[in-house]
Length: 265
Image (cartoon, rainbow, N blue to C red; front, side, top):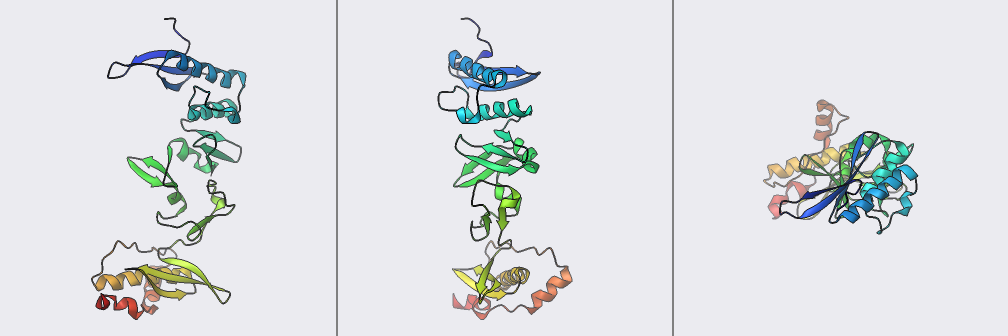
């Protein structure tokens, strides 16, 4: 068989023959993928050459007739236009970048996040976006200070309503503390602290979110002393010193229906 440019053959552990396609540009070796037959591997190589050398394609040209995987297609398109190579499907613009999941679906990030996403593969599960790092999965919302159990529209929102736009200016955190949410009463914004025991129990409403967050912490302490142990996560109030925190903590009264909850079980 005549050797095809950019194609090498190899064998799997079970002895099955397969073909690798690759190219070298300016001294950089770029893998184009593995294929079951030499013709498909060769087709991927020719497509890659056309992308880089002939400027024949644009991102919108990709379809199922390509031998190249879409991820490789994006990587090559970005390399052609920016002369910067990434192993992840990133496409740079002057102010931000796209991270492509498919031809129709992509996320938008600020360029300051470029190094992170250039080195981490994005995945989607249950409508949430994750990255894998050292064997663990992390919801990318955690990079914005948004907790895993936060609810969209209640605890945070996308300003321009594009749920795939993760630029910092587009993500607004509404409730940054556990058990705290804002409520409107008589034209005034108050902060309601709620703790879940067997159902939600209102701790109280307060004029600022910090007091509401401390009230939530005190409710946890109260329940713990009563022998009720759940996986509550306390709030860390970074703006107060220990003395200031303690002073506010002492002024908060925990409602009777929470303080005496154990007696009602």
